[in-house]
Amino acid sequence: MNKQMLMLYIAISVFSLILIILTYIGYTRYMKLSLCSCESYAKSYEKLPRVQSDNKVIVSIFTRKDDINSIKTSINSLLDQTVHPDQIIISIPPNTENIKAPDYIKKNKIINIHKLSSEYGGSSNLISPILREKDGNALIILVSDDHAYGPDFVETLVDESKKHPDSIIYVAGYNSKIFSETGKKVDNAKENDIIEVSKGVLVKPAFFDSSIIEENDNIKDTPNLLLSVNAHKKGVKLHKVDY
Image 1 (spheres, rainbow, N blue to C red):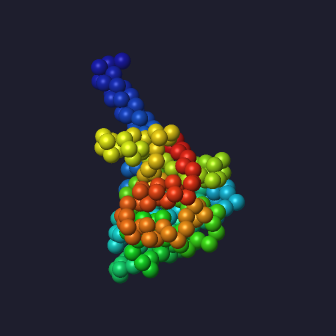
Image 2 (cartoon, rainbow, N blue to C red):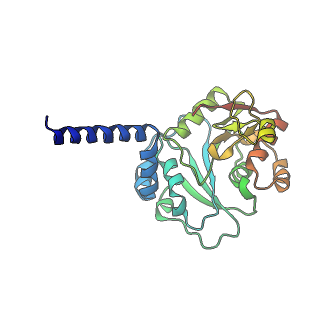
Image 3 (tube, rainbow, N blue to C red):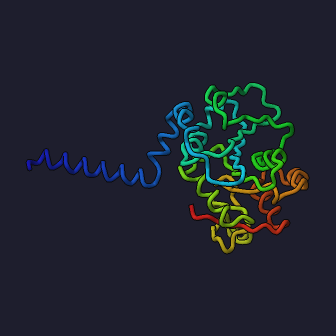
């Protein structure tokens, strides 16, 4: 093997190794989610099998962006799943005038844009479905408009809820005492008392009551605190899933 062929072989091997590593950590998928159009994901979305659950399953996301396409990385990650829920609800503020539903949403039976009647701040993705959903045992998965979620995210949270039906299922959290003392968010399932809502959470309407509206008025735009305080007050268990 001459020197040029050897260098080419080494370059290809290094490139292949880098590609494998990037694929393993999810970077290549993230780039695809960011670059590809939502339409391409939406076409195959309804063909996915429904998530296996006897309960109604709703994915709830809130955005203040006027252009839905500006949050396409998050939306695409919710469309690029192993299963689909019964609904994906995109809630928008009551004072939004210019936002228009893209064609892929208009044509999709699962995705809906819901204009809120009141301003609930950063906790809108939690309060909006809780107020509307009459089934107390419905599974509501809360997500953020600036995160990308793994391809089995919905399926994993629903499966964990089956095993722990009386618990809030969450992906990441931290201990408030340690945070107040050190400023560090230490994630330990045995010590966590604050849930990071943006990383992904599954709740049920039965875990809350109407008082959450008044509490939100007092601590608006703090969904982590609002959800966690209500969980502790109602005695709802917290179950962390390693995801």
